[in-house]
Length: 434
Ligand SMILES: NC(=O)c1ccc[n+]([C@@H]2O[C@H](COP(=O)([O-])OP(=O)(O)OC[C@H]3O[C@@H](n4cnc5c(N)ncnc54)[C@H](OP(=O)(O)O)[C@@H]3O)[C@@H](O)[C@H]2O)c1
Image (cartoon, rainbow, N blue to C red; front, side, top):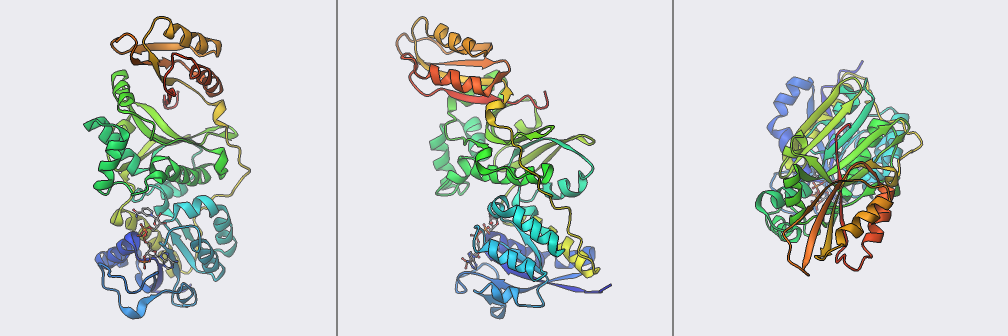
């Protein structure tokens, strides 16, 4: 058994998260040493621009622009990738694993795209692979699934895992305003990127959901197998109706296990106001997860940002450092991949919210109701705003359980009616376990 007392770290990237990791190791280094029983030392740092002005003081001799300097350094035990992007990050990590180095990454895009290959390489080489920060930033959901819930079959996952989308929906609900106005404000305040599509179109949430699904069910959903819809069509009117009906609209990442086929979907969802996820506001993230032994659990916290994300990265580093210092590398349970059996969205059965934009004239509701009835969709409630003959009015319909396939077919027909003026808004209603 080795008695290594200092574990060397190679940091690839010194941006938001990398800087956070540097600061946290500096700030809580003594505490970490006490708890982990080992010193953590950054041996090398790789960046793109060594001349860039940074908020931390990094000794010049540690900085390089060549990732090989990290890979070739025998003093580096753990390679920590915080550059982002698929390449060259993917190739560097594969090479690090090949050389027997343990790896840690916060890169959700990389794990969602190449996770299977990376997990396999790490398992075969017997090195540890930490990716806690790749989902929900500071919330230790990956450790919870890999360790805390190892004895459970996970039955359901619901995640609010994109802070930007949750911030926009919360602002729309609390302060009013339409999507585009609130988005502009969020961009001004630094809560949304200048190109927000990754967040508001659900792509970021779908990458994180893909990681959760691979951990829980051992399948990587093929990109085309996951249904992904963003929040950009949600209007202030939908949020207002939702509230009146006892719901709040959230961008939910959902997966449920149906004994063989797994649901995988990201879309705006009607969440009942009494559900704990309804209270998750602003940039906060939450994951609500049900296991067959543990029952329902919920994790809440900051899903991004310098220090929350660094907290997750350093937790991976500290765990691996303890293993290395004690002379064993125990690759934490990495998902063993099975053939993906993702349930097509067309097979979903759930209640629906429809908002039809129609000309206010007699007989329109009857036409809509006929199309719904023809497709086996039973109406639970209808709401119509005050009438203004001949003008455009919204008609909101809440349904009982309906098949997505039927919903799509009926809406396609309804949208062709002459009295229907805009594309119908369809929002799935979540009943949580029912
Ligand atoms: N920011 C968050 O809140 C957050 C939360 C969770 C997960 N993550 C993930 O964490 C990772 C890092 O995010 P970040 O926000 O810290 O990114 P960032 O601020 O853009 O920093 C990226 C860093 O990587 C360096 N870099 C980029 N390409 C490189 C290359 N080819 N060779 C060498 N260095 C290179 C950059 O060097 P220069 O400094 O010289 O430009 C920079 O230091 C991403 O995968 C992201 O998805 C971020």
